[in-house]
Length: 115
Image 1 (tube, rainbow, N blue to C red):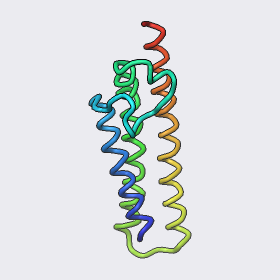
Image 2: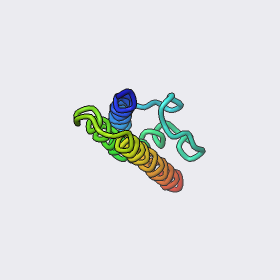
Image 3: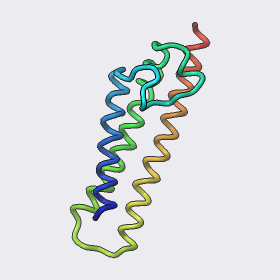
């Protein structure tokens, strides 16, 4: 029950932060974001590159939401099912987080080459 609630809350956090990234509300050097040499060259590059990765972060949150909701709303099931769904949800979040980081870094590098 606690892992399901935690997974659900992590999903909400990722969806919210992905939305902030898409709307270009993250400031350079904020506590949430991909801090790499490419993204920290200017505020414009920071915002544009994070806007590119925001949707991927939101998809990671959606996967965690689905896994958490599945565990919360389904009737009692075995420990094996709980662990499997939790691990799948977390793997989804991690993989999409890494994909978002790659997309953000790639976009920032492309913007820096143009400048």
